[in-house]
Structure formats: structure tokens, C-alpha cells
Length: 146
Image 1 (spheres, rainbow, N blue to C red):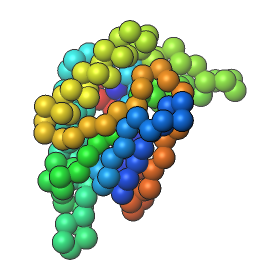
Image 2 (cartoon, rainbow, N blue to C red):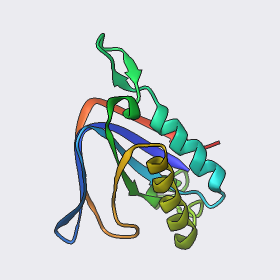
Image 3 (cartoon, helix red, strand yellow):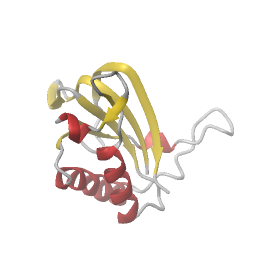
């Protein structure tokens, strides 16, 4: 699994003109599922992200997690994160999981983050989405499961 994690002051996702997910301060996670990913990848990534200390403490040092801050997470499925652009001019998405598997692991990731005590909003799997965000920092990290 690959996650692009962005620290945000707010973020939302819109499908067909309607906002379907919205958060205040927290993390926007763009999530890509690899064809070889399993439940172990879900658990690893969810636990890592929920406890990642990237929010500033009272001294301005990155020392608090989204859970420490009482923040929220917006999770948006994005298979293009698995795009390989090394050859030619068109990305190859051969490494991305097929839709049924990707959706299952995407939903499992959302459920695991909720189980870890963080409020989660989501996009819509396989939908054309508009994602809006107000970066904080900006802080953007890329995290891959083992």
C-alpha cells in the first residue's frame, strides 16, 4: 500500500456536485493498493499513520499524532499512486490491485483507522472525485507498507 499523507487545516471530497466527505484539522490520505497487499499491509499502515507524530507541539516541534490532536482523517482511494512512469510516456498501472481487492483493502483500512479511535471521512471508491484541501505547513509524506 502507498499513502500520500497531507497535514490539513480542512479537506473535502465532492462527487457529482455533492460533498460526500469533509474534515477539519487532520490528515488527508490518498491511498493506493498494490496487487500484492494483504491485511498485514492494512494494519501496518493504519497503525503507523494514526500514531505518526507530525503535528506541532507547544514548541513548534513535530511531536503529536492525529489521535493526540483529536484530528480527523479523510481517506481517498487513488490507484494512480501505483502508476509506473519509468518507461514510455503513459503510466502503467499493472502493479495496482484489481478493483474488487482494492476496494476490500480500502474499506478495511478505513475500518482499522476507526477502530484505532480516529474519526474518518471518505471519498467514493472508483468515482471521479474533486478533492479540496488547505495544507498546513505544508507537510506531505509518502509512506509505503513493507
